[in-house]
Every structure is written in C-alpha cells, then in structure tokens.
Length: 334
Image 1 (cartoon, rainbow, N blue to C red):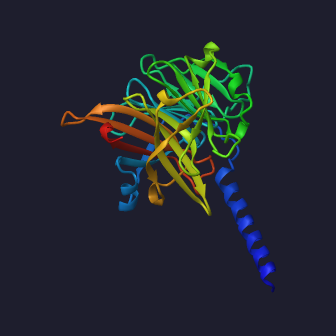
Image 2 (cartoon, rainbow, N blue to C red):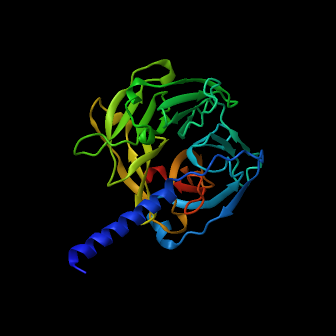
Image 3 (cartoon, rainbow, N blue to C red):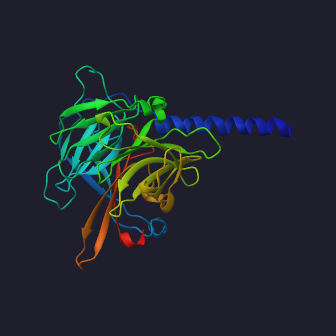
C-alpha cells in the first residue's frame, strides 16, 4: 500500500472516529416525562493532586455527581444563587431546579420552567440564568431563538424579548452566558465566533433589563486559546469570572476560569479575558457550562468567595454526567 493511500485511510478513520465522538457528546435522547421526584442524590467525587493543583488559586471544597429525575436533573447549563442560599440551575430541556446543598437543611425543588402559552412545544434550549439577589427575579437566555425570558421569584414567567442585537446569532451557538451586574446592567455573551483574525466572541452590555427595550453596547470578547465562553458570574470588585470550554480530540473536555472587567468594555472594542485556572481532566472533567459566585466570611473572619460549577451531560449519559463543584478562593488572589 502506498504512502498516499495509507495517509488517506488514516485520515478517513480519524474523521469517522471524530464524527462518532461528536455524535455521542452532543446527541440528546428523546424527551422523558418528569416523574415528579424531588430527590437529588449527591455522589462524592475524589480528585487527584494534579487536578487540584490546576485549579489554583481556587481550592476544591466539595465535588459531586448529581443524580435525580432523569427528565429534569440533566442537561444543566445555567447556574446562579438565590437570596436564601440555594442554587438555581436551568437546563436545556426546560429544567428548573432549586438545589439545596448538603447540610443546609433546606428542600430541593425539581421541575420545569414555565413556558409561554403561545409556544406549547417550547423547550427553549436554555443556556444561562442570572438572579437579582434582592428580589429573586431571574432571567434566562435561550440559544435556539436568542430570546431572554424573565421569571418572577415564584418561577412564573413574566415576559420575554428577542433583542435585535442578537437576531443574527446562529441558533446553535447563540446566547450562551449572561449575568446581571450589581449596578443593574446585563452582560450577554454569544458562543459564535466573530468574523476576523482575532477569533473573538460578541459581548453585549445592556444598560438595564433587556426586556425594557434598551439598546446594548457591543464589544468583542477575546478568550484565551481555543476556549469558548459558556458562563458568567460576578466578582465582588465589579469584574466577572468567565467560564470557558473546549472539546479536545478524541474525547476530552477542558474548562477554563478567566477574569474580565466590564469597565473595559467599549463599543466595537476588543475586550480581553485573562486566564486564572483550569480543569484539565481526570475525575473532575466534564462539560461545565454554569458558574455562580457568593462572597462569605470564613471562621477566621477573612473575606472569601465561593464558586460553583455545574456540568451539562447533554442528556446522553454515556461519556458525560451532571457534576457540581464547590470551590473557594481569596478574592485578593484574583
């Protein structure tokens, strides 16, 4: 067999294997009917020294694989914290889960988000959620039609909008990350790469609630390496954590935590995120898409920050799972 033929066959095998892996990773099973179960099991995960080192300056407090109603406790992409300390996780099949962490003594609430009566078949492909800590009002962004939906504190739907600035984003790589900044502005990131040599991503900064009709400032987010932005969370000093994700051949998810400052956003300007830590593989590795933060004071009276990450198993449960990580960091080290 000639060299050219061997190279061609090898290339075909690699291509076929890559297509198979992508199918396994992104294929979603048929919709399941919720059972109504409110139970969530937390299965502890043990990380090795290399994984823990790669997370520095963050320390790993706790890590779990979550198990529950397979129709709802799956496909989780958005994460934030409610005023009562429980986590709010939203999924790409309409999941809306209030997660009470072990030891809190509070209940879980497992169910589906309220849908628009005019869209009876809506599943939304929700990718992100952000919460007003004062009122528990929440907003989610949907990738299929680049729509932002607002929910009242009780989870009832109170309105939605399809911002014109997001209308041209492709539905499979559209609105992927969002946070409500402490001053009431909203930051939304798209997963589609901008055209041009910088390989940036669109970043929209709304002056207030997007449902108000306010026009955003658009900038171009530059992520480290090949990472795509998949999550946003606030830091106490006004900066934001940007969660990045990349899928490496043959089947390796890597995640990055980076920092960017919204005060540096300028119309049509380049906005850079600087890398801080990585999830490099091993027991912790998965398709993390949600990130949330909350400041606290430790037993010694020092100011610290808790950071939670949740992974999206794409509802296929073959090579992925639903994982929840709890990290801790001294904000002064960021």
